[in-house]
Amino acid sequence: MNDFVLDCSVAASWCFPDEQTAYTNGALRSLRSGQHRVVAPTLVVFEVTNSVLTGVRKKRITSTHATAFLQAFSKLPLVLDDTCVVTDLFGISERYGLTAYDAAYLEVALRLKLPIATLDRRLSNAAFDAGLRVYQPVL
Image (tube, rainbow, N blue to C red; front, top):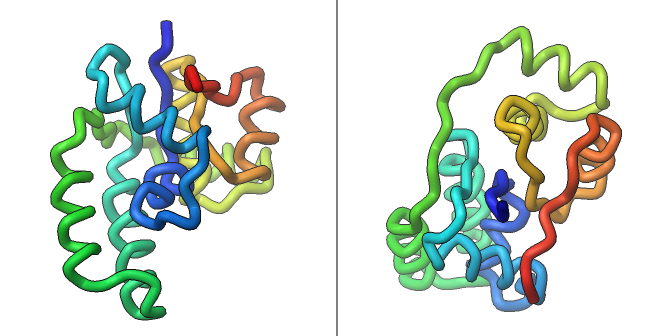
């Protein structure tokens, strides 16, 4: 089973050529294939949009590129999960030293018992400490 939880650090990298890696592109290929269930908290939409907006404001990408990327991102077969319990987020944040935002990704991964695709070291360490794996795409 190659299903996984996708976090913003991986998803946002797809917009910026200098941030793409074999790892992030492998996760994108897995998502695009439609053969894997790829899940993220609804928060990912806001975080990816904010990352892209920041890229435009810092003149890393054009508004045209940003708009095209966000349109393509919205068409990916990503399952958005909005089943979050605030007290669970707080407990996960407190236990693993995460922001509530990062805890949202870990909460989904814990609840669904899925590995997490992330570039965030703190989140990957928390996933490991919680008994989860970090997703490893076929490269």
